[in-house]
Amino acid sequence: MTHFAAASKKAIPITALVKAQLGKWLKSQNKHLQNWVSSTGFKASPGELCLIAAGDGRLSKVLVGVSEHANLWDCGNLSKSLPEGVYKFERAKSSNIEKWALGWALGAYSFSRYKKNAKNKTRKLARLALPKECDRAFLECAVEATYLARDLINTPAGDMAPAQLAKAAKALATKHKAKFSVIVGDDLLKKNYPAIHAVGRAVETKDQAPRLIDIRWGKPGAPKLTLVGKGVCFDTGGLDLKSAGGMKLMKKDMGGSANVLGLAHMIMAAKLPVRLRVLIPAVENSVSGNAMRPLDVIPSRNGKTIEIGNTDAEGRVILADALTEAAREKPDLIIDFATLTGAARVALGTELPALFTNDDKFANAIAKAGASQQDSLWRLPLWPGYRKMVDGKTADLTNAPEGGYAGAITAALFLQEFVEPKTNWAHIDLMAWNLSNKPGRPEGGEAMAIRAVFQTLKQKYAS
Ligand code: BES
Ligand code: ZN
Ligand code: ZN
Image 1 (tube, rainbow, N blue to C red):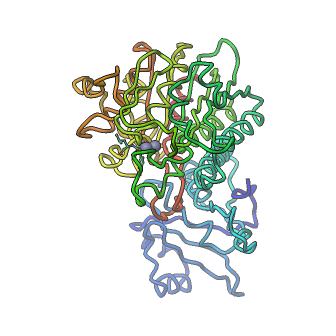
Image 2: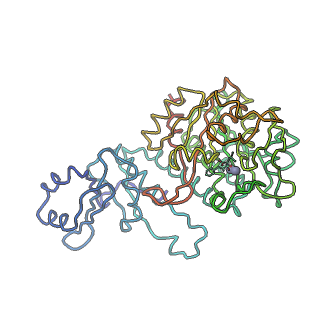
Image 3: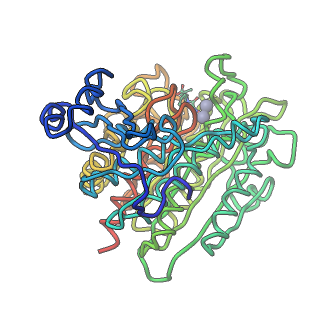
């Protein structure tokens, strides 16, 4: 990890200042500094910078404006906007430094795999020296998890087919000495994953063949935790083809699986006392002569039949089989992550993932964890009154209820049909993408809700 440096006396000090305290702080400084700060117009607005030179002209100090309550994103631009070098926060609480440090490192990300210009790739960023009171292990692992998710999402679908997604999952499993297996192509039919096969069968190359990725890790006897991630490597919509605008970002439709791999990394790196299983149905939702058609009826692993109301509602169809397999082992908790519906984005926007769960305790815990991690989710109801909307006309269920009202809820209710009623389950419908650059959150693929979930799991299992 290159964003953080060891504590060092030589590091350039950064003074973090809250706007309301700037005046008082300035009074304790010399006239020279007071004049400089006032002539630069520095007001200590959150994220605002003021560079200060020593008598010899070298950079000797940095002022940065911060919010009254330490905010992750106040320092989200610093790695890229400060000159190359090592910095440290002066006279600040280590709990505040931890927040600023996380924002600093998350803001240092860039996706340069396809940039030819080597200079762009190696622009040296400002690094932060961490005091030893900071939880460096957590910070590094949260940053690695986020970078992993972003890299997987940002990689174009041409280089991130189901085979490559499986390869990335295998690399993670190997790193943590976890067991890895995968069921590919027609073997999905032999092993009774007909819904995953039906969605993913319309492909040309071996790399694109549908598959179910399976990682297992942890000690026998520990509580079972199963993570499921939607891995649609590209969502064209299928025969119900998306519009150009609607299709453009659909390399991110494996964002659920990317987040699940990031979260799995955090869990394994922290050695949480759980028996972890990760299930990723990985497919392409493509168009060809053998693609599933509107009103086709598809069998599923748990026996319920699915009528295809819309080939673009493919995520819930592959998750049906993966959740059935997850639930078969009666784990202590199942959590799925999926870029499942546009409707969840209409309801909550792009930055706030929707949470659905039958576990009120988990919902309350994650609300608190989300706020403390600045990684919030918002609970929506598994409203039983809408359950009838997912009934099929010629099959047990439809994947696309008519009208489209409450689309995020009906998608969640569809998934619930494949989870045992007594199993604790949470479903996270997320965007996994930043539409524009914001401090700490560059445009492109994004990890969402994994810090909140990790914190919740740590509290639940590690005590
Ligand atoms: N992957 C999309 C959902 C999506 C779109 C998530 C944009 C985030 C941003 C999903 O497969 C889809 O197309 N869902 C349809 C379902 C509908 C046809 C019932 C949707 O939400 O419109
Ligand atoms: Zn779709
Ligand atoms: Zn999709």
